[in-house]
Image 1 (cartoon, helix red, strand yellow):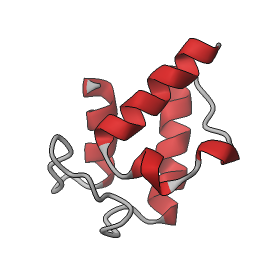
Image 2 (image 1 turned 180 degrees about the horizontal axis):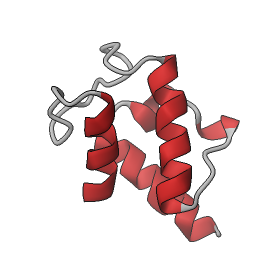
Image 3 (image 1 turned 30 degrees about the horizontal axis):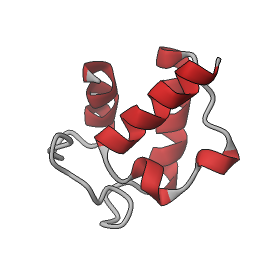
Image 4 (image 1 turned 120 degrees about the vertical axis):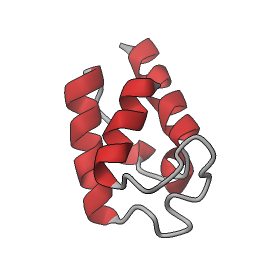
Length: 76
């Protein structure tokens, strides 16, 4: 999870990712941020986030995103 937080901090260092639960709904992350994030996650965790997982619920918090990464790792 620390690696994910570091990736997120590179995108928006001013956000408290430990408590934020509205990264998409609150317009903290935009479409360009998501593209960067998906690419960084692919490089760091060796998982591919396919279109079916590109829903706001999976990106609204660091925890939701971490849960998705874990799920994708388990599927491999």
